[in-house]
Length: 371
Image 1 (tube, rainbow, N blue to C red):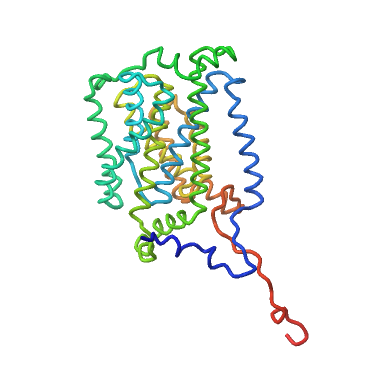
Image 2 (cartoon, rainbow, N blue to C red):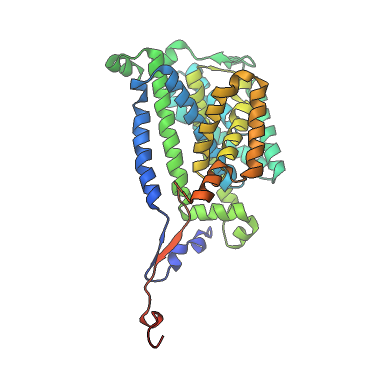
């Protein structure tokens, strides 16, 4: 059975003497700078205060959620407003594994992602029968059903929630080593471990999405997003592609939810399944930064963090300011802030467009006295 990707791979049709390139000099320079930044972020817990580590943890979790929603909506064309379902499922799976089964939290984190992906299987079965705004509303309704169901889980506190046992984070894998070798206090060591995990997850997520978009599967996603009917006519299995992306984003979102509530050490249904915190803010980040680009969510999360620190004390005015900024951006920069920058400068930090270069010029095409 063919998926039709082969018919969409331009490399096989490149004439002799020509080549397809996607890298640029700016992208190579940025790659080295990104590697240096990742190393600097990795050593931050050893040189910075616990408050800074927690701020960076927040930025990285929101960035990972935004990159996953951007892959789902910006590339697969699935506008979901129910991603809080997977955050909540991942968080509750972590608490269940730790409190009820005695798992080490570090081991429970990837298992929580698997649980969220399993929940996404029946979710996809129902949601994929809906299209456009009906799909968006359907995902929100399904997330609310998930919240109501887990609110009945009396063992984990029901509607009021519960907390992780203090010894669960103090005794988790790696904490004692950080305490003994670097003199960290157990709470700071636990924060550092959660921070390193989400840093690695954010880097792997961005790298995977970039690799995916540069592959033939990325071409299939772009075709499905732009015109699903035409993509199907070319042999692309749109249903399979969308399902795989949906399950993958559920898995990563579930891991992020587990890490968030491992760091918080307390959970409740309303917090874990918050539409505002885990979907509305994420959509804002992607729309402000630039949907359909890898650079957009990176820029968007920095803008969001700055606005949150500057205006969060103003209560409802803060939410109003976010809404006004989102509307202004959509009116005057429909492709987001990064789209505006890219249009004016031509910069692409994560280039995925294929550029045809090279080519030998035949002698009789060069011109001359008889040309």
